[in-house]
Image (cartoon, rainbow, N blue to C red; front, side, top):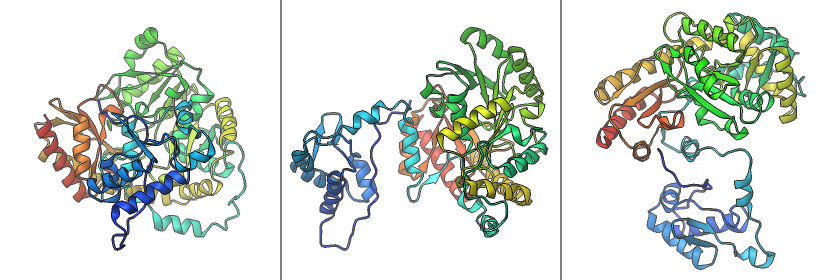
Length: 490
């Protein structure tokens, strides 16, 4: 298991003036002092470690130590044995203002669980300069359609553009366009059965609070993207993992699992599964539909990657086989157009969509009307298909290069399967090694990986490798480096 310090650490985003007459340690001292005295770092805040501060400011650790010693001498910081350095309870502002407000206890008391420290670290490091994002679930900037988006936004004088609030389910025209888009995938739903959401993750949040009781049992693949989130766990729900093989999730085990543990809902990513990249076979899909019907088990189908088939004919979604209304179909434009657009959708029975729409109105009063308008333009103008063809060509090239590099550098130390679409390759090392050490050592080489334990606590020797973000040159360097580091750790 990966091990990081408990408690999120604050960030520092200030550059030092290396041409100033003021010594660097005094500049660091002043930056931290300002954050404390302005209330940005209240009493009890655990400040970043000396190693992290040295990395943030790009100075020697001794320079940071000198700054922290000065702040400690002034009574602004205090160190606890084994507990790191924290902002002291008796800061200069606190001396005259009475007991300081203990924001730390409020932060710990929130009902929504925080991300794991590993996920928080990844989220921070993804935006660090020079980092190669080898595990990220995002398209590279050069694959995003900036010129096409600019062209669409220039036409924002369209009579369909809305700048006010939209109706609860989302803009009607956008939902009609989505219904037509889904029909080309074999999914037959009307605009009335579609809810527009701010990305697929919001769909899961709405479902968790709108349809499930506390302590509900959610079945999912193991490993699964869902294990890296606390959407369901924060509502005291229990995740129960189902085994996978080359054909994806095995539906035959569901009845026994349901009998033993219970089951209120099944969450699955049948098309280019996250994190393994597997594609559920057509036979498995039909079997899953039958099992779902027989057990009256509702299914969430997450089809975020369904349009990214790189080899062979397109695979139909589970929802295309659904004639009973037992599947909630979740889609998004984040993986094919732009994650910044923040547009996704849920398609399902109208009573369910009405319920989720009501909760969404209570939550944010609707997704961005401008983003909904842009999404409709993308899907109705032919630009979506044109852009998708370009992205798939680029992803195919990057996937093939990643596979070639794995065969060159990782043969004999790891195993993997070539995905036929999506973003990911699930790499499992053949001998035990410390994932936390691999993570840290890779980070020192400016390579950011996603450990398998994010998706399954038992996946102690696996990583999720993404070919959607790193360039061909970065893929070659990072895969070779990971192989060398892993070989030394085994």
